[in-house]
Picture 1 (cartoon, rainbow, N blue to C red):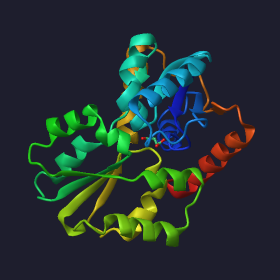
Picture 2: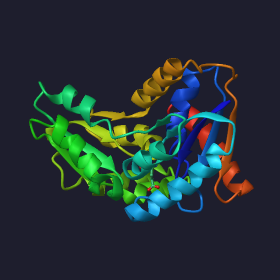
Picture 3: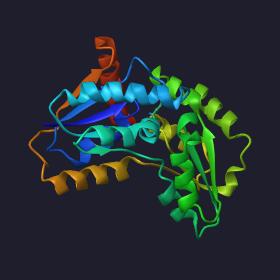
Picture 4: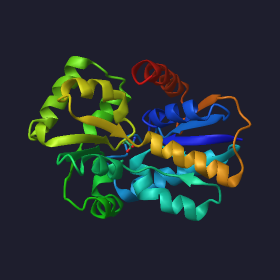
Length: 257
Ligand code: DGL
């Protein structure tokens, strides 16, 4: 039995990378909703429908858990998937809590980067109001970054310009942590770190999600039985997209290790 990872596109591989490292005795399926990427600019209803269609395909495979390796899909559809399926569904959310804890004493602010759909959801607003008692959290949607990523555009000059433009309205000295609240964004973590002032820490939710996955597997007594195999699938059954997933997977090993 495999553990399924799901995202609109190649972004979720950044979470799968962490899972493969931490859980070498598991096998994995990675399913990308190629037909509908990107999710960020779409409506809650559309994305919920796409996620449910994908989940039906995924649960048709031999899987023991599903990780929604997508902040956007989690924020609109995790509750619905948990209602419909008995197998564990592990979602993810922007790592706002650890970021606030890191900055509480230092007096610096937190900037959360995510898709416009994630940032507009009640789930995100509730998360911020629960943990941000000092009102230090700001948010910035970066819709173009998902498009750059899906085109495997990692050109440092073009992306460097893009980031500088996006951060222009912000006084970066006032910020201590940037949260990557979309699983496509960690591909750009090294590049981001090179354009940001050195005191800013860049964090994402992968490690927390994989910790939760590990706990759920052990609670259910279903750990192990695999050997680190990864199988790629996509909603269009397009072999060219699976090749792109393989290229992105190799690239990730080079960029984030
Ligand atoms: N990777 C996704 C996320 O974590 C969604 C990106 C998109 O499809 O717009 O939010």
